[in-house]
Amino acid sequence: INKDDDFNSAEKILIKNIGINSKNIKAFEELGHLYFREKNYEEDIQTFSHIVKLIEAGDGIKERFKNNKKIAEIYFNLALVNNEIKKFNEALININKALKIEPNNPKYLDISIEISIINKDKIFAISLYDKLKEVNPENNKLAEFKEQIDSL
Image (cartoon, rainbow, N blue to C red; front, top):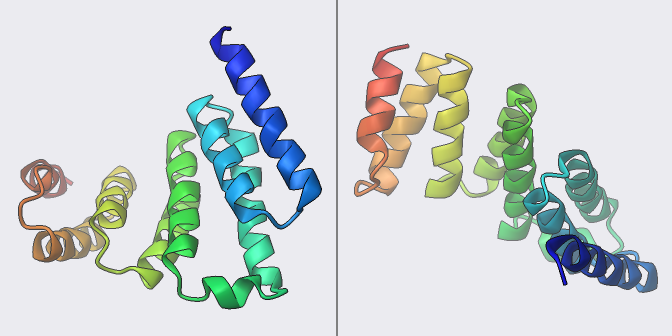
C-alpha cells in the first residue's frame, strides 16, 4: 500500500460518512486536514469553508458551536491554508476571526504575527507581539519576531 492508496481510501471513507450525514462536522474536519497534508489547498479551503457555512446555517449546530473553540480552530485552519497559498489578506481575515473567539491563544497570535510581518504591518505586528509576550513569555520565537518587526 502506498501513500496515494492511503489518501484515496481515507478520502473515500470520509466522503461516505458525509454522504450518510451531510452535517458530520468531524468528518468534514478530518477531510480538511487530509487535504492540507496532501497539499490539496483548494479542496481544503472549500471543505473548511463548508464547515463554517454548516455552523452558520444553524439547525442546532450553531448553538452547539457558539463562541466555541471549534469555530476558532476552523478559522485557524482556513488561515493556515490561505497563508500556505500566499493569500495573506484572507489568512489575516480568518485568523482575526479565530482571535475574536480566543484572543489569548498563542498559536493564533503566532501566525497572526507572521502574517503581519509578511504584510509589513508593523503597528499590528507590535500589538500582537505584545499580546503574545504577555500570554506566553517563554515563547521561543519572541526574539525572532522582535527582530523581524524592528526591521520593518
